[in-house]
Length: 272
Image 1 (cartoon, rainbow, N blue to C red):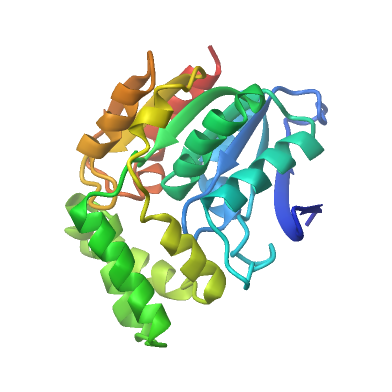
Image 2: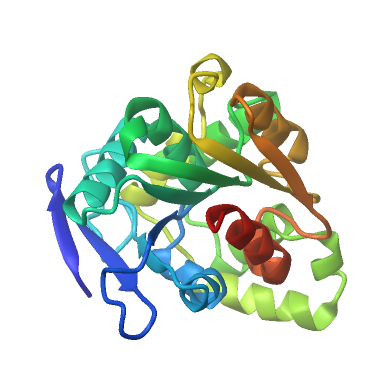
């Protein structure tokens, strides 16, 4: 696994290109959400993009092993600076940036602070602000960490499934069991994850996003409880000329629940 030393931390990244192209293929950068490994993109999005002729870079944000945990704490500015440094070190920019959830938040802020690095944006399961319910959820999760509460892995998996998956998925017993097994086995904890959770309590950034000039497609997931379509639409309305799409019958993990529909929307946009 290759690593880069940036901004005082070591980032683990993944570099995939079509056979025989090396670094000559047009690059696309994928930015993962809170608690997720960059390898989650490799289930569906990386193969589709590579097959379409793109060099695909994904990485583990600080806070997620094997990247450095960032035990001293960090915020959105640090995550954005890491992403910018990765683009510069690998000489990717300007390039399309695709983000999911916290990764979309990072991509949005990157387009504000370092517009020269961003060619176009695909923002999935995103928002421009924390409403009352999402702010309360973020604070409650941070309070659990602060009090040292360690919930049983099986219980956390059930809660995570109910928060992040569509009822259509959960109503299928076999799919529900499969997801619960995966979520229990891939449980993430520790100060790095706690710092990522804190990033979710964001102020209203709609005024700043009106300054984004990169071509943008916002993709919302119909049954998303973490970043509902109404909040995603706010992002699209703030960014001049942004497109807005909704993928049906999937929740916050829509890029995994409905990969064919999601990949089609990504490929059509970054390939223009």
